[in-house]
Image (cartoon, rainbow, N blue to C red; front, side):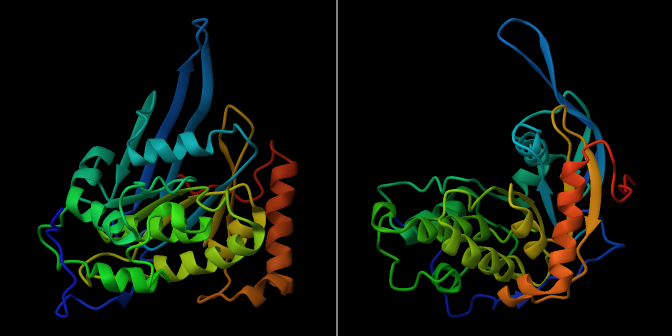
Amino acid sequence: MTSSTNPSATATPLVIKHPIEPDAEPAVRLRDVRLTYETKQGALLEAVDPTSLTIRAGEFTALVGPSGCGKTSLLRMIAGLTPPSGGAVTIFGQTPKKAQHHKRLGLVFQEPALLAWRSVEDNVRLGLQLNPRETHSPTNVEELIEIVGLSGFERYRPAELSGGMQQRAALARALAIDPPLLLLDEPFAALDEITRELMRYELQRLWSVSHDPRDPPRSAVFVTHSVAEAVAIADRVLVMSPRPGRIIADIPITTPRPRQPEHEHSDRFINDTAIVRAALRSPTTAAVPLDAA
């Protein structure tokens, strides 16, 4: 298949874009969003209690909570993949469907979901072929593959790659459209611990770069079961209660960026993880008031 987007020496160079912009249009706004499922027996199951939340442009937010608490459901409502049972979701002031249409969000799931018959390069190009950017400079796919550390593996197929390499390719595919919002649902859960630690710092680096200087700083919502991962990556950690899920703590992480793995041995990191763990152990107590503006 001939690609409509080819690597070009004149493509806009990558720029670092990670400052939080408090006065800009919020990346995500939830207003009394809730989710109710109907079981096979016809009973109603409350999955997510009414939740209000604002995520600022350029902010990296992590969602943690016990299994089945509604973290993924909340992320899917933000992405527009699951319609809420009530309330409203906006992405940069638009509905999730309009945000999808305007290529304003990228999705990375627990499984890389690469097409087995396509090479790394062709999998990354798929995002551009399905979601061409009409107003921005073309993405240099070759450069993006180099950025995620897969140079030399452009023609390899997914079965020939390790789990970490597959997830790098999935990240590159999501970043190819240069989305101002990145949504990640436990993208490292299937990786071994060593690779997982490496990938969380790789993700921070990838999150902070953009191809187009006209885009706002990239925001991210990251679902994880790992407290250490959340504290290492995020600007704030949202703790959810057991089902029906609701946000019971909003914990700021003030460690300056860029962050290095050595930070995880610091007193600040140990203290922040202790605060998040305390919130998880006390699900009826909000450790920090939630900004529901």
